[in-house]
Image (cartoon, rainbow, N blue to C red; front, top):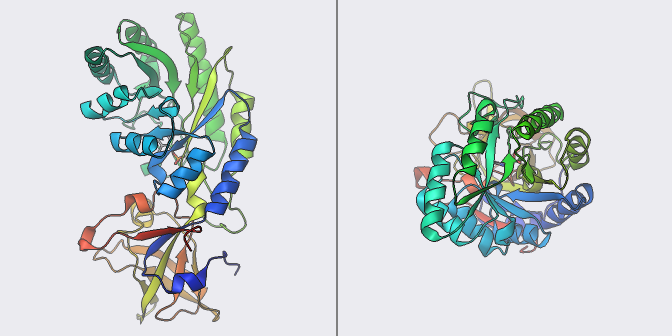
Length: 385
Ligand SMILES: *Cc1c(COP(=O)(O)O)cnc(C)c1O
């Protein structure tokens, strides 16, 4: 079984569990994004919620990406990382007043607004502050992303966005609000999408919507297609970089942009997931009646994706070359869902072995909690070790 390359000797002396970020892979990923989205009217924003490790953010900022934020805290982190305000967009179905004011005070590029009720509040707060807020309407395109139901966002039944049938009406009402300026339309259909068809379907919906809006005399200068490009969790060594070529090609080919329109993307997982690894130590190998368990010192409090989304992460034993055996790899938390993987073939494992839980750079460390009063995991980058 092919393994990733890690500074295993350096890992040995560190307290586990911890996150490890490969900045070299991140650089190569960012270079691929630059190559595949080289058109001057393509703007890629990094979806901050995937990972906010400072060195990761700095690397992304230096590559020239903007930021897609979903909270005031993320806006602050993006600004602190050096991402210019004019490259920050702000989405979220429940923006609090202080968050809206923070965004206005910093003159971020755009609010991705999700309801008429929200628009009225942004308009009122902008008026108080003597500002004009740029607005993109987040539209629910009713496109099925064919991904896990907890990470699909663009269906009528989801809480996100304005229904297609109401967009025309809401766009007209934005024009009556003096402290708002309608600049764009925003979409985001879900996450971990590896089949390009849903993105193509999104393009068709956007084309239809633009035609409909044109009949009402409404033109926007920005189309934002959100994020959602998936990665290969099964084969991180063979496929360390997401299919950016195929992804950007779909939009180039199927989306009919109007004259002078900019196209925005918000990529999170595909930028950072492959470069992150959760490193954990085996505490015990427990032989059950029909199974054996590798009990490790990382749990769902460090990486919740398997418990929350039934997500698969490849696991490699970094310190054993013994013949493969089959294990359930489980954490120490008092929850039956605290399982990383079941019935999994892995090099023969003993107490003290180091395991690499791969592709954990996105929605990993950021979701860590202190449940069971555990310590938060530490984190290192390839530059630290
Ligand atoms: C989470 C999110 C993204 C990023 O999604 P990925 O699947 O990580 O690419 C983009 N846009 C919005 C609005 C989001 O909520």
